[in-house]
Structure formats: structure tokens, C-alpha cells
Image 1 (cartoon, rainbow, N blue to C red):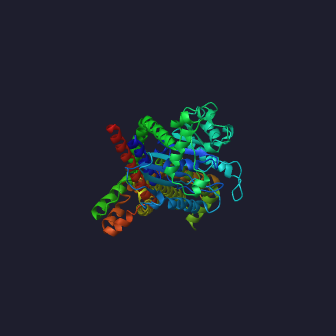
Image 2: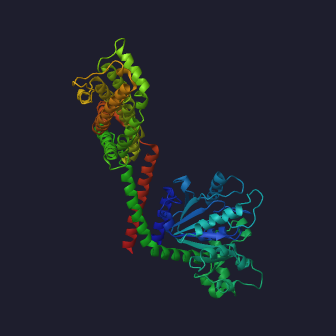
Image 3: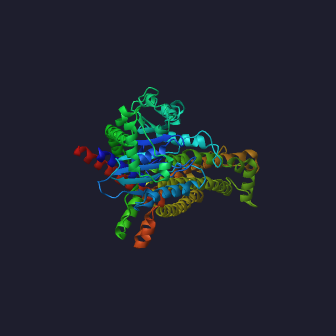
Length: 610
């Protein structure tokens, strides 16, 4: 029995050390899956006296009004007879307290440290372990006493705040409720029983404790309550006789108080027949047996949670990555592996494994054609502009048959307009590639640990994209210039010409400057521009893909690889300087994984030993 409960105590303590207690996790914490006993009662109901009776030591702060202002997680460890009794606080490390008056003082000071010296409360627990041959293995949680009215120095919300804090413990299905009620109070008005009935209506998790039996009016007794007639619970009621204030003032030994309690019940004409089921010693053993049975019943569920948590923590550690090595060669290898992981994600975006690459096609299929359609060819090839350009090209001597120079000037002027859409396509693809680099860095799980390396990869990739953009712009502008540099002669040879009856082309000098003549020139140039536009619409995407997309897929980080290969160990280590948040998360996961594995192994060893 003791080994099972002692094991749970150790697991609970380890949970608290690692911060697993009360953590906001998607799954219940290991602490929440472990059964605990929570002491609930109104202020001055005798909660402190019950705990001290169970422990056999006077160690809790006392006073009027609200004394317990923070939860006290009290873990009792039974030791061998003859061994020294001592206490340890979690916040004090391995420091041992053998003087229990100093334990009381430390509880008070630790409470004041968080809540101040007023009458405020805090949900932050104090963790205290007591090692003694006079206790049973047990975990008890003492909570602030329920109250109905805020007193001076307390906020008006104190009544609801305390109830909410108590509810947060007793609502858990693994919580065993120790409901403390003074015997000189009507059970119907008991704050503890009222709250226990709300969260445990069947009374399956509730143990009723009646204190101050010796203070009842002469001629009265509490047998109706203790025998379950006034309010029935699934578990027996237990009566307790606390030390009187005079005993406390005289520092009466707790072991002597236990003896006097036994004598009270044995000699009582009212309680003598049930004396064996009364008293703090019986209560401690009863709770210990109950806790053991609950633990044994919950072990399969606890083991299931532990195994599930181990799997999740191991998966998260794999996700967070291994601890960084210190060897320069291994560091260089790690950096290159991380770069390759990023490059793989980046290529998936381009090739369609991830979204984003389709936006490049959108530039070619929609943005480029739309930009070409919006070019001001109508204005450039208007009758007025054609007449102006052709006349200026003729100079002082009008053209004889066809205004070749006029044609060339009109075509070159029109083709220059294609430079705008060509450059815009390059810039649009450049912007998409930069955005894909940013997304790929964020989606490369292995890189999340290393913000410095992320920044360097981003800078190197963007620098390479700038070079690719410059090359791409030069290429597409050169393609436009090539169209201007050499016109397709066959196109003009196929144009219809006016001929005289003898078959010779002839146009009078008057006809050369008629409106119809200029319209014919504008129409011919427009047809040529349409032909070039169709060619550029097909060739510009090819140039952009070749100079930017293809190069980004093949050599995005080539320059970075060269530079990294020249760096020394210290510089490589700087690149692998992890995000402190992730480092802390990995360490936390490692500690919790160690806790869960240790808990699993210890539970297994206890089960095999049974």
C-alpha cells in the first residue's frame, strides 16, 4: 500500500518541479490524472487542526479570519521507526526543517511573499513534504476556508474568488473531497457539504469529517450525522476532537493530543460503540486505504496517459530537432542539411507540391497579356501621329513609293512600349519568388530553431534573386530591342501595293499625303505590332522562367554554400545560435519526457512487486 501511494507522491512532486502541475495543455496533465485529497471547509471549521492531527505535528499558521491564503500541497512520506522527522519545501530545495515552528514561519513568509501581508489570496500553491514514522503515505491539499462575507482589507470578490479556487480542485473526477464541518454547527448550513453536494451529488468522492465534538452543548450529540442519518455519504463520517485553545497555548504535544482523543471516544457514552471508527488516526488510515484503492483503479488510465504523453513528447522533440553539436565539421554538415531542407520546400512551392508556384503562371497568362492590351497603340498609330512621324521622316524630300523611314520610326516607337510589360513581368515574378523564399523559411520546421541561420539564408536567397532579376531584365529588354533592330521583311513584302494598268506600282505625290494613305500605313504598322506582340507574349515568359525560376531552382544558395564553406567554427556556431524559446521548450520537453518515463518504470516495478 505504502509503496503505491509513496510512488504517487514522488510523481506529484516531480510534476510540480517540472511545472506540469496546472499547465495549460490540450491533454490532462499527469498531475490531474493522479488522485488527490482536498481539504474543504469554512473558515475556523478546524481544517488546520485536522491536518495537524493527521501529521502529528503543530506546523500550520493560526489566527482569526482567513489564515490559509494559498493552497498547501502537503505530501506525507512514512519513514522507518527511529528516523528523524523533517520537512522540506519545494521552493527551498533540499533544505531540511526539523523544527516545525520554523515550518509554520516559512509557510507564513512564503504566503506573504506572494500575497502580501494583507488578506489577499493566491492560487499559487506551496509544496511541503513531511517525512515521519508517525504518518501514513498521503497527499493532502489544504485550501483557503470558504467564507460568506469579505472583511476589511479584502476585495469584495474574495468570497467568489475562494469558491472558484476550491471548485477548480474539487470538480476534478480524481479528487477525493475531505469536507470539514464543526459539530456545533447545523449540518444543513455547512459550506463544505453544500459545495461537495454540488460537485459530487452521489457522495462517491466525499468523506465527511465532524470536528469540535467536545464543544457541543451538554446533552446533545452528533450520532445522527456520524451514522449517516442526517446526510448520507458513500463513505463513513469520522468524528475528530481537536486540541483546545488552552492545549495549543500550553504547546501540548500532538501525540498526547491523539491519546486524549482516543480516550474521549472510548469513555463517551454517546460515541463509545463507534470509537474504533473515530479519531484522526482512524481518519488518516481510512484516507490512505481509499487513496490506495483509487490509485490502483486508476493505474490503467494513468499508464495510458503516460504512454500517450511519452509518444507526443518524443514526436515534439523530433520536431524540435537534436541538440546542436560543437564540432565544426558536424556544424557545417548540419547547416548544409538545413539549407537542403529549405531548398526542398522552396522547390515544392515552385513545382506544385505546395501553393504559390501557380502565381507565376498567372503573371504570364493574365498579367502580361493584360498589360500588352493596355499599351497606347491607338494613340501612337492615330492618323495625326502617323502623318506627323511620316512627314518628319521624309524631311525636305517626300518619299517616292513607300515611306520606309516613317514605317521604321512608327514600328520602333511602338515596340518600345513592350519594355514596360516585359519589365513588369520580371518584377512580378521576382516578388513572388521572394515571397516563396519567406514562406519556405517559415515552413521549414528544422530551421525554426535557428533565427540567425534563417536570416542569413533569407539574405543570401534574396541577393541571388536580385541577380536573377537583373539578368532577366537584361534578357527581356534585349529581346524587345532585337525586334526593333531587325524588322521581318517578308511581312512587308506580302502587303498589297497599288499598281497601274501596266502593272507598275505608282502613287501620285498628292495621293501620298491623303488620309487614306496614312490610314493604310497605320494599319500596316498595327498588323506588324500585333505579330510582334504575339511573339513576345510567348518569348518573355520563356526568358523569365529561364533566367529567374530555373536559376532559383538550380542555384539559389550556391553563393551562400561557397561563403559558408570558408567560415570557421566560431562563425558556424553563430549561425546555429538557437532561438532561446525553442531551447527552453526542448529542455522542458526533455525533462517532462524523463518524468513520464520514470513514472512508467516505477509504476511497472510496483505492479510487478505486488
